[in-house]
Image (tube, rainbow, N blue to C red):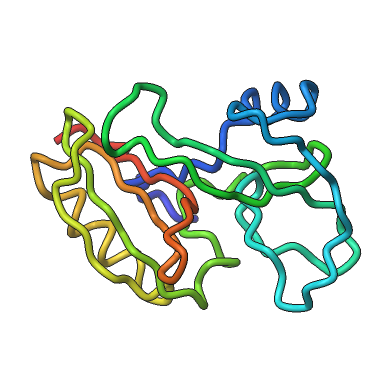
Length: 162
């Protein structure tokens, strides 16, 4: 039995926010939630359950801003999600397996929500980068973003106080 305490928590898009958006039929920026059947055999990265969509699954593309407060860093970008509620992401103390094959940008943010640093990270070695960034006192949380398009993927937060 593994008794180690996780040092970080992976945070997908909040379920309550997604439920509100799905119910409204529009995202927070007025874009309609238009379900479609995924036909991409490589899968769209789903931000609700942090895995790749399977062919035949109903998905939707919405605009999302991972920051509640306005700031120069509060970018709005496209994210894929299941068109209907799904089981979410349960393994929050583990880097998502569906993102292991990706090279991403890891942004570290300070306690005021400003970018403290950024680096390219291979998903196959993400834990080392996460631990390194979260070991820095000035870092409050992390965001992973797509390498090519810059789309928000998910957040990572420290689980142990510094």
